[in-house]
Length: 205
Length: 170
Image (cartoon, rainbow over all chains, first blue to last red; front, side, top):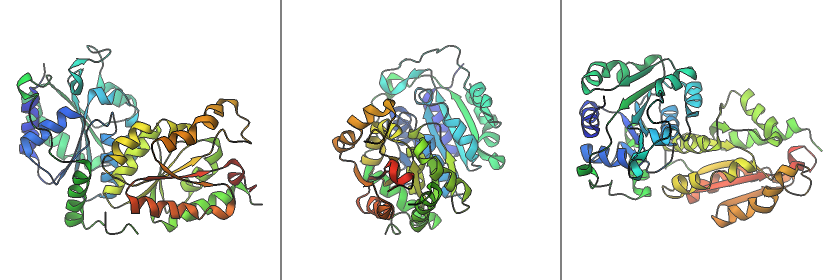
């Protein structure tokens, strides 16, 4: 079983409150932009090949009063799964690592991941000591478990696997976030400055 | 002449002067004492990472939270970062301070660093990655200068330390 790609993102967008969001490669960036049109509270980190959740960890570390969601496709995840060791050491209670699992390299034509049928991401996470792990394979399960997985992480870092269908062909042509890197940086950073009082750009010298 | 520990302490003081509070590292033998010194110092949260790319991600995110940070690694680790640096730090213009080693230079007896001797600095030049080589103890203050410059230009800057400096012999 798997959740339709758009349905999962629409559900999370509807549930989102003040969370900062970091997206991963093309698919999650495109879909998150499509369902939110958010240009300030989201850092669209395209094609980072596994760095989205560590970048989000840096944000979450410096802003303990913020809540941060970080999307990562499983194609990126398998390039650097030991990132979870670092995340476990940091154990940031304001960070939710959302693993978007569709068992394909979604940003590059949906070609299959190696070991596609059997890889157990939650087991991998648990082997590295993560205790707060969830795996959702239906929208109903995600709805039922959302609060525990996404809001109840005062005890530490959360790792949430969403088993999704590959993005539909009809969604392939949805708009990419229409911003270059520096604009994304400045909008996100200015939002953080205004909301949390952090000195991102005004304390550089 | 200084001890390795004294050199490490001077490096750490440079980081403190930059208001750096987060240090991500993956060790090279030459900077092991520097990393230990960061780990012992309560002014810093030291985070050992699984690969150098993780340090790039973590430090880049820290910048966006207004937190000063530094990534510490060997030359080999920096050689693995071409994509990460160009993708994150060049594309988004995010500053990043890296402390690295000048492996493969004359005096390095490790044959497995011959490739770094040949290609390390040319690789940095190829992507226009700014660096300062610290080849004498009196140049250790270049670390803060490099950090400040990374903020000025919104790009990564590397402070590259030689074997002799890190051993307290230069």
